[in-house]
Length: 385
Image 1 (tube, rainbow, N blue to C red):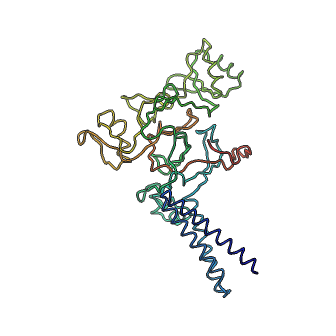
Image 2: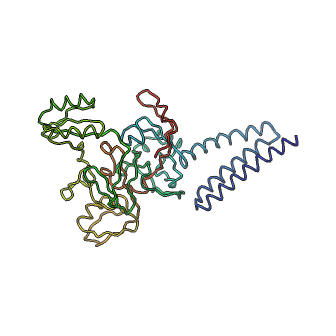
Image 3: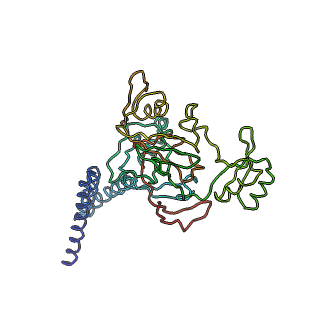
């Protein structure tokens, strides 16, 4: 009995020590909110321990099990809300790093937890609101101002991040952060430059291009010979052949005399900065400076066209005009995110700048992959880079 008591004491002291170390770490990192959560959970564990020691069997059951149910429910909600969440990937916009069918684990703690801005974002609790008709009418709208708790790291270039769409808050997206607040972005003939440095994209092996030709039968024969996937498509007033495959194979087709041109698949109708002034496309964009907190801009017509929508939507400014003030200083940080599969990615070129407040988590690990009724064993617990 004495040995058993000593073992139990050692376990208790070990748990207390782990909790204290975790609390000290949180305090050193100034993550005071997390230390509060640890103390609350530790308190509930101690309460369960005390109830389990009650000598009265009936009282022990009446006290222990209700608290246990509340404890389990609280832990599940806290884990999903503050620590990690699993997301399903339906599209190929990040193909090369993350494939369709992947279930990924995202770390919410790293950048700091983005608190919910509506009850629909609180796991389990949202079930009660789904049943309420008047509440459902406001689904997707912010009920209160969202805040971010302090994390232990900052977003870095090339991080794969999960964020809420700036245009549709209820849509969650995953892209690679290619530019940080204050960086300058430019895309020239599908090549990405950040601060005038070329960012090579070696993740993608499958590209989509459009071939314009005076001899479609000859091109069809070549594509069939190379075993490339293709189809014919009407672009405005001209027919093109859309082909998908390795860039080296597609580039060879441009050497034939009957091929007029090989270009990226056009998708410019919803470009964020789509105007006669800029005339930018998804293949040729910018240059544009990503806004950062305390960055001051002159409110000329060009800058109002570049940043006006962002300022009015995310800076709590009802209307921006050079008539009221000559300069504007940004309050928040913004990011520029793109899919690794840039030919087929709905990203910052269409969404605009990503506000820091919209960042949800960092994608860390592929838990498993299941696509088209097949399990891809090679992607089990694969690190996302």
